[in-house]
Length: 310
Image 1 (cartoon, one colour):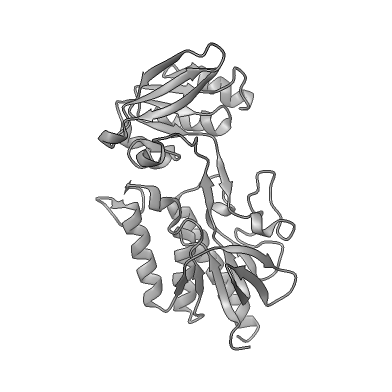
Image 2 (cartoon, one colour; image 1 turned 90 degrees about the vertical axis):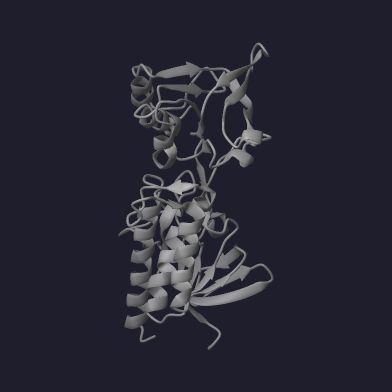
């Protein structure tokens, strides 16, 4: 029984590191499986100005590394890789991790959600340099600029409306002439004088990777084939996120988009399994809220194991 872990934490973003810190300080010796995107979405961010305690801001990767070091200082163990499948039908739970099998009394799922990208030639090179999937994170940096938002659903409308606080002009680009957004969100966007619509249009590429900044988007009309460039200082993706929870299909409850359903903030329907951060939060998706739920999950694990005499 000695090889059974008290707690395994899936994910190494803000939620995972915070859960690791709290459970390590409770002497639970947590094992953190770093996931297929170590560090989560903050590792793709440059300057973070809205995380409390850093009045001058801090680089996203540096913030994540500081959290990791803090948790490791108290005994959290880190292992690279991600869970392929899991058996949550009985405790201890069994996790298939690469070629290894791990058993754990409790599980904290902090595997996050991955932004949907367009797959453009220069897109990845410009993430953090004008390409972003988070308006609330990066909108401020483009005050007084002309920017573009890609998408046709509520997410895109919300991003565009938020960005009008900073940008002089927001061009909302959608590949169809009909929108998936709710009527109320679409009406709000259409009544905002700063938002301009480009329909039947796709982005073929984003420029200019050689300058390490967004200068323009290469656009194409899907009906006429016309190709042109739109001057812009940033491109925000409003095409949604994909929660990293497929390995729990049929075992944990999800909503229609695959986000884990929780009660009392972090409880899943399986006793001993908790979910925190972006894998269960489709509303806020902020570093500070992820950290908060990571703390909650760890405290619940500590309470459960204490009640069981562990």
